Image 1 (cartoon, helix red, strand yellow):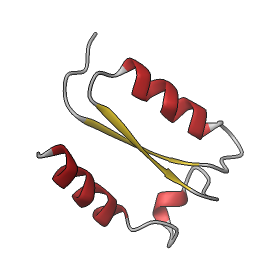
Image 2 (cartoon, rainbow, N blue to C red):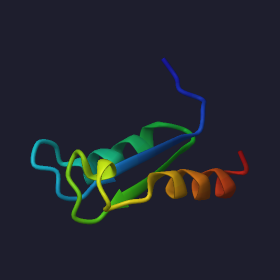
Image 3 (spheres, one colour):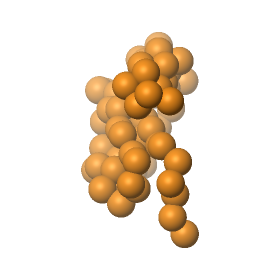
Image 4 (tube, rainbow, N blue to C red):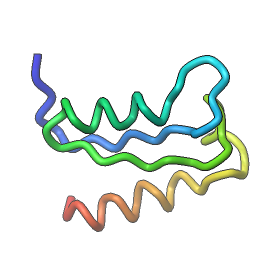
Amino acid sequence: AHIEQPTLVVAGTADALLDSAPEARRLSQILPRCDTHLVAGAGLAGTLDQRVDLPSVVSEWLSRSEL
């Protein structure tokens, strides 16, 4: 199966369960239209607290991607 939609992977750099940063890089290599945003010091739930303003990250990505 191929994903043709633009994709944004948001990953933390300090995840205790999964090494998310390398996985984000791996996904960006296999998905044709994939960008990554790494959140320094965040774990799996890093997007749920104050470490990142997820709406702003997505908005900026949409602008850069011309979507």
